[in-house]
Image (cartoon, rainbow, N blue to C red; front, side, top):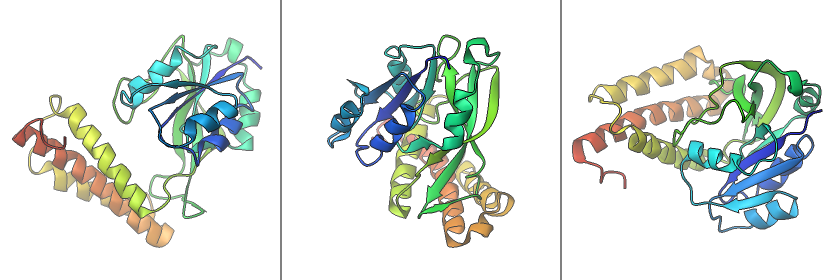
Length: 253
């Protein structure tokens, strides 16, 4: 198997980073962690696990990951979030890839999102295809502050899985929703104009899409709540963007 590097960005991930790094070291020759000045034991745990740790004030998700690429030793990079880990089938499939002669510049995995100890298979949470393995000599992450993506032209979807521990509870989901919607509004203030109709229309569409068309109703109360929070996320993305455009760049600061 051709050698590859692992890449993780972190901020206060002491509860997750050990399992993530153990997973990466099963297929990676070296692992780079870019830490955003964590106040917990993330850095200590990462160094003890054998990762090379670099501290960097958070630049946004895309720029932060691209910053870490310069420290990776190999062309092929496997990037995981700190709360993700490879399933056994992903490890086996990666080991079977002929990356030296690959016609692709990236590979996608199926992601199992866990919540309240359960694998959520509805509300767009499965199959949740995520692009994680790529050739950094041919592609890289977009520079988006949030919802960054590997910008590949020739990629393949694999059948194996990454496990995502997702959120601890509804409170954490609301916290993340607030963070992501703030980032979206800040990033798009000068790029996208919206009207007062945009927030409610996007919010309503998101709820019906996730609860009905993406079968959130099959996942009981969690399915309903996740669909509702998806709708709130869509609503507040545009509500906060409208707020910043109406009241200036000081809003949400």
